[in-house]
Image (cartoon, rainbow, N blue to C red; front, side, top):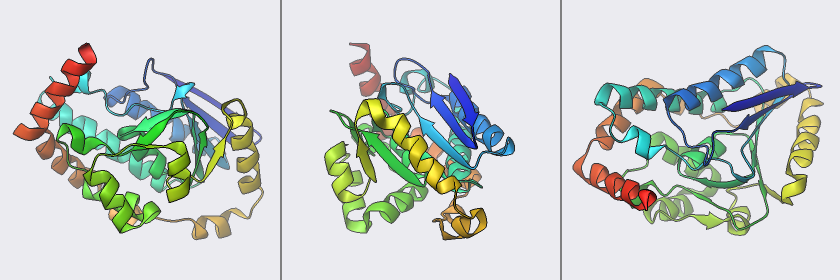
Length: 243
């Protein structure tokens, strides 16, 4: 599910769970473990990327939906621990968005320090409301930090996914790159970061850590998950996917 590499202080973590890099408990834990191992191995910068055409399609709803409450809370705890790990990373994390990044994929991206995206007919955003799942406050705060409160609220409220050109215009991504040049550009940007004094750079990076409480966030997300509205919306989603 994960392909990891580190060269000259630049670590690459490539998500590879076909077809959509959908997030379940084991995959989410593996991403967090790969990030921790890269930092422990001396990486100065971590690049997080996906499969061609798909960064991550978000939660693996067909797998998660039938699971009991303890398993769902365990998933959310792992998911929020991963968000916390990215936001509190001791080294910068660059998201190289190789394709679509809706919902959970966008959550991973917005907790990184820099987002560059492949040009193409790809979309990104928080569309959880479309399946009846409210966007947790901790994720909404990160979204608002990037886009400003009004734009973030409008996009989340309407479950809107935007193309990468619009994402660049509103600040959801920082840079667009031709798909075949994405990883070369990500490495080039990372090399620039790695050459900077690490302590000074770390203190200048945005920090959302004080706003993230994985255990409390997981409990709240679990309650929302089992609401009648959310369950109905997700069952409809699974039916659409089955077709």
